[in-house]
Length: 283
Image (cartoon, rainbow, N blue to C red):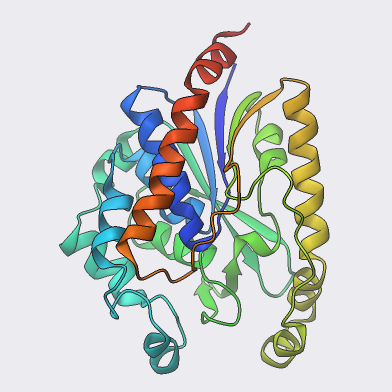
């Protein structure tokens, strides 16, 4: 049996994921492999470095700091989340990222980015927690329209959620046969078509496959949600998800809102603890 965890993105909805992950770590629930998408990667990587509370702590502390995320950053740099702050100053100076623990922990950790030339997902296995891995995690979390394209080894990448929002099938294909999924939308959520397609075509028109992926993203997402619900009904996966929409801004500046969504994640994680333990003990 190989135990896996799948972490959906959703910008600051990821605070829900942080709460659930902290409960899992506090209760010594471990995994053989993990995959994170967008915020599921930027916050979920702390699972492999065993840093309980870190993602919640720095988001609550810096959420109102214009150097972290702001319209000002978008206008000046092309990134609504300030890249030097998020991927250098924050992890290496302000709230240190334990890349050594990340590198030595045996759990496999993948992040998902979208290749803008093909519109297809790319799954990068993070090993060191340093420069290349952080670049892939940045790409995974780079939301179209409010982020610059991320160049890695000659390729160009954006948000992994565009092409594979909840990559349970990826983990199953990797041989992970017992999986926990953390979603950031409620059970009955149905995604609608992208509202800003004219702007997408204007800004990303050079990459028609990426534009197409954004056009059909809602179809992909809703199919993945159905697949997970069917697996859950058959007791083939366990899912932690919010009971209602989280209603938090992608660039939330209110620490009380960060706290609220984090606590909802903790509550949901606590409620599932017994089920998770029993699921992973099944033969």
